[in-house]
Every structure is written in structure tokens, then in C-alpha cells.
Amino acid sequence: MGQVPGSPAVSEVPALPQDIVDASNDLTDAVFGTTPSELSFFSLIIEVIFGGGSVVTNFFAIDPNTGLIVVAATAADEADGTMDGLSEFGAIYSFELAEDTGGGLGFRMLNAAEFMGGTGSTPSISEDGSRIYVSDNVGNVIAFDTELEELWRFDVGDPLAASVAVSPDNAELFAVTRTNIFKLTDLGDSARLDWTAQLDAFADDPDIEIEFNALTPTITANGVAISVGGGYAIGTTAIMLKVGVGLLDRDTGALRSFTEGREESIAVTSVGPQGGIYTASSPVRRVSGKALNPDDPNVADVIGGISRYKPVRNDLLVRDASCAAGVRARNAASIADSAPNSAMQDIRQIQVLIDAVEEMEAATGIDFQFGGVTSAGMNIDDPIIQPERAFPFPSLPFKYLPPDDNGADSVDLMIGFSNATDTGDLNGGVIGVGGSLRTTEDVDGFAQQFRGFAVIDLKDLYVGGPSSAITLSRIKATTTHELGHLMGLGHVDTSTAGAGLNTTFDDSLNSAERSAVIQDQLMFPALNPANEPDFDDGDLQGLFELYGNRSCAGAGSPSNQFNVGIDWTDVTIVKSHDDF
Image: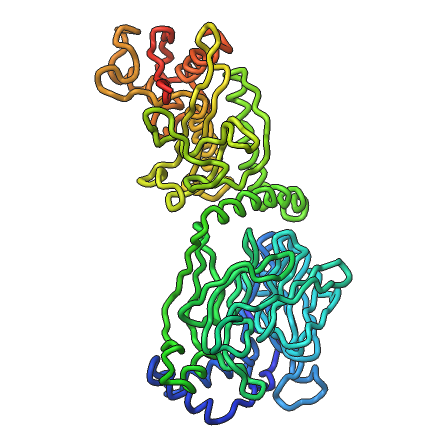
């Protein structure tokens, strides 16, 4: 247990007209009940939000790189020069967990810093752990180093209503007040204001007179997820009638998309793996809006629960995710020294994909050249991947194939990352799909030109974290397996009759030995945790049948536990989409 040395804060709850307070309390009492001590939730939440009488009203932050714990609270009573039992100063404290005299663990305070005005937010820590951001209650965003030495402060004009959102590249900051959203850039010893958001979500709604920020922003791959409220003003108090979520352009602050929602939230926005946005319904401002307009059908009843907003433009979602992959790779390089654990997770996954491609190059003699990222999605009607209908009408893999001659630059191969929601073929536990179309052959029957695809559900492969040894092995095995399909290989035949091998290839093998040989192949239709994530002899022979790059003798040594001498020239090579 730890104790900060602060004193209760001076209450600065805005003076709401008493009729609004009474009507709002009556509504929350009717919908949600009261506290065990019969306090109304509306007044209680307003008091807590504005810090009345509390020492700590925000959450703490932890630097994942070092374990440093940072708490924003109030300063000691004497810091403001008046011993009255209340603190008019804010403060920020850093702690570490250290062994105490009894052999247990306790909090040890490392540093502290005080500033005029109470704290306005939970501390935020940059990705590399070098900066800590907090706000006071008069409108300043304040940057500290890890020793809590102040580096700069920037006045946005009004008190911040939530924590500062910090982008993974460490430089972009997003600060919110009760009305606006601001983008700042950390320049090292100062900050620059880049834009104030254009909140015009309800511009065409005749019921809405003013629009304002309604929630902490969440930085995403393709923008900044926000909540916008709409209503009217009574004096300086905004009365919220409607609310929704939208996406701001990170470069300009323009509202790129918006949809009206069901309820306000004072929690945080969560973004799911399929791009959906989740908010916890916690009406406060909308309580007043409904309480003052109880019979207006255009003002929805207040509710609790959770709201989910799903993406409906999967093509844009996949395009932006592809662009974010490049940002992630650049970020790994930029923070490699300051946040090595985070950077290495990115680097290790990227290296595994490179290893899989290089193994395929060695086995086939085909030179793979990176052509860049594409805005095309996996399983959508994108102009770059329009479904192609070869006779009679194969549906797979042609809905994934890159363009041949549709006026756009043609590419031969596409490797994508998706999930079961966006790519139906990944349902039912499938972790990857792939295939190819051989377009020409040389005089010996070897493929000369082909087109293909591979789609992988990367997160389904995580075991023990994104860069654990088993995760990287599973990513390597799955990627190389799907590249096998991309290059024309089919699955090993697991039927009882031949178990994928001609019955004449070696009569000396018993069923257990035959099964082991089959499961050792990387083209076995399931992950084999006991296997190395590389092509085995049968896989290599299949690629030789297709591309003729290496002789059977050079295909490698058997890696199965029985070490049987199989003449792979007697094995039937199953090819994917061989008829095309």
C-alpha cells in the first residue's frame, strides 16, 4: 500500500441551475436508483469529476518499459501557502515497487512535482517512456521527463476533460476539453498546436444548436476515434441531446466519418480487432438533456450497458490497416533503442515473414520482389481484386487474385492478413488460405508464370505473446505453408488408402511410420507443434515437380523420426488448382 502526501482538493464544481440538478437527480434515481447511502448518481458523479474534496480522482499510469508508476493527485496542504485543510495545487508523483524491511513489497516514492491548479487528468506516458504528460485544471498540458522535471507546458484555453492521448511514435498528442479536441506536436522543449478538430457531425440536424467533444480520443491506425455530442447551451452549460462516434483525420482534424449512437460515455473508447468501436454507456450530460426534454421523442431515454459500432466500409478498414503496417515497421525502427521490447516484437514478426519468403525462393528459384502495400482487401469487391471467373467458375482463389490486365499495374502474388469476420474462408479455426493459377509452362512442364494469393489470420497464432518462440514458429510454419499453396502445392493427402504416399513407394513402412512421414510435411493440413517450421522432403519434391529448381538428391535429408529412405520420385504430388 502506498500513500501520496496530498490534501483534499478545493471543490470547483460548476454552478448548475438548481432546477437542472433536481431534474437530473430525479431521472437518475428513477433509472439507476441511488447509492447505498441514498445519494443521487448525477450529483455524485459531477462532484467526483471535478475533484471535490478528493486527493486522487484519476487512475495511475505504468511505464511498461521500466515499471515506473506515476500518479496525478493534489499537493500537500502547505504547498499553496495556506494551511486550511485543502490543496489548491496539483502534483504528480512517481513510485517504484521495492522490497520492504519485512521482506515484502511496498511503494517507494521516487520524485514529485507541484504546479498551480489541480490535476485535470490521469498521467500519460510516451511509448518510449521518456515523457510523462498531465494537465492542470486551468488548461495547460504539461510535459515532464522521467525525473519529473518540467520540460514545457502549452495552454489550450480551457481545462482538459480527460487524459492526453499519446501516439506510438511519441510525437503526436491529442488533448480534449469539454468542447474541443486539439492536436499538439511535442518538439522536445516546446509544443506546437497543429489543429483544432472540426466537429460538424450534426450540421444538418435542426434540433442541434451546438456541437462539442464528448469523450477521450482514441488513436487508431486510420485516424482518431472520438465522440461528438450535440444539443444547446444554458448559460455556459452544454445540454446534450444526442451523441455519436466518429473518426478524425490525424493530419487535418476534419471529421472523416460519423454515426449517431445510443448513449453518452465518460469512460474510454475501446477498438476491437475487427475495427469495431466499443463504449460504456454512462450518461451524465445527456441526463440533463433528457430530464429537461422528457417528452421529446427525438431525445432518447437514458440507458446503461455497452454500445458497439461496427465498420461498414471494410475496404477502407483493410486499406488503412495495410498503411498502418508500414507505420508499425517504421515505428519499430524509431523506438528500437528506447523501447526494445516493443520494437523487437515488431521486428521478429517481420523477420519471420522474410524468412518464409527466402525459403520459398531457395526451393523454387523464383525471385520475389516487394511491390509495396495495396489498398485491396481480402474478400471484398475492390477494383484491385475484382473476382475473376475462369471456366467454369472457381470461387477460390480467384476472388483474392491480383489483377491481370484491368488497366491497373499487375502483380503476380498477394500476401494478406485478415480475420474470420472479414474473410469468411478463415472461419471454423482455419488460420490461413492460399492458392495459385499457373498461366504458362515451359517445354518441360515447369511453371514459368503464375498468379497467387495467401491470406493468414495472424493473431490466431499467438501463444504466450506476439513474439514468443512458439508464436514465431507458428507464424513461420503457417506463412511458409500458405506460400506453398501460393506457389501451387496442395495439402498432403491424409486418406487412409494411401496416406498421401503411393502404396508402392516403400512396403517396409508400417502405419505409424507412414503417418509420421505425412505429418512431417509442412503441407500437412494442420499445424504440427513437434515439427520444425520448414519445408520437408516431400514439400521440396513437390516444388521441384512444379519449378525444377533442384534435383531430388538436393532436396534435403528426411527430418521425420524414423529417418526412412524414401524415393520421393514415387510419390504423387498433389497440386493446388492443377486444372487451371
